[in-house]
Image (cartoon, helix red, strand yellow):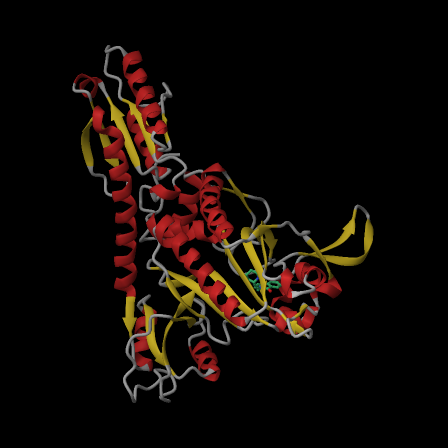
Length: 485
Ligand SMILES: O=C1CCCN[C@@H]1CCCn1cnc2ccccc2c1=O
């Protein structure tokens, strides 16, 4: 399929849906909220997994796999952890024609699946820290508008679940993992994110505190949670009796964390970098970094050109660059240019008779369309340089666009103007939950209400006497506010 029917700035929703399909990342499925992830998406997921797995191995995480199913009474174990989520739980009630004795839930997250066994496995402080990570799918039967990668009823994630003897160790790991999430977004997906703490209302109810990395989509003016790292405190230890014999011979409850990032991260990347020609891939997550295209000319010997292309791909692959060639005879070079632009491949190399004669290749960047004639001898070095430039340019451009959406407000009127202007709002807040609820109530509408996105770790100066934008009470902190996904 060539060319886009929708423009990013005209009809973002349709544009996004077209990009993920035309770039062959997603195939729509006949169950709403479920999508087929094709290789162009799965290879990105695998590149992120490769980085994250290597990093958490350094933090001594061990790989596990727990069952997909959880019994009703175990899932209901902790009321306030599950209360708001109950409607999203999917249940198995039959096998074949016969009803099951008792319905079985499909995991929406694995705390209640894992923690009865953490209780069994942790006896003494020598069994700590316990560090468990699993890569799996989870199911949450949501009803709000499904969006490929961003909001689906089944998605892939990693979920880390750790247990420590002290709160200090847990607090430290929460931030170590959050930094890995920042790196996934900023160093791989080239998406700028803000690290911060969720409010008491927005945090994971079962935990002690929640930290997150928050991204922002300028086109829709919506914040999007990129990943979360929770300190659970001793809440689940109390519920599931996860205790250890401390060095004084008495029993103490463990301190736990849980943290996750999901396939949503791929959607955030698509939304951030995509343009009206389709997907734009940051080189560090591009399944293919360079596509080499032969440009045959009338009666000139095409075999020589194709051989030169093959040699070029081999040279690049030997240097660890993900390269391929497109020699399909039934498509014109122009058709191929559009096809690989739609798929977002960072660099295209064109080789025609003139290039051959001059021992050079024409290299074209997907991010800004810049063309350069590179001597064959310098190809690997120049291509690596260009890939780094594309990665950096995508991040800087996204950061500049995100920062241009940032609006500092001090009053309610300024807040409403900024909200309707699709801004990412930074406002002084009295940190009272009643006020948070009030803002939600006063901004309710078909675009969804405004909410706190996070309280950034990086706090601007808060002069004495600064008042909360919504309540007029003394402000305690600066927080990001906005509509969100
Ligand atoms: O974020 C994470 C990180 C990974 C492990 N789980 C935590 C918290 C999950 C919160 N949550 C989110 N949706 C749910 C949906 C249904 C039932 C329960 C839940 C639920 O507990």
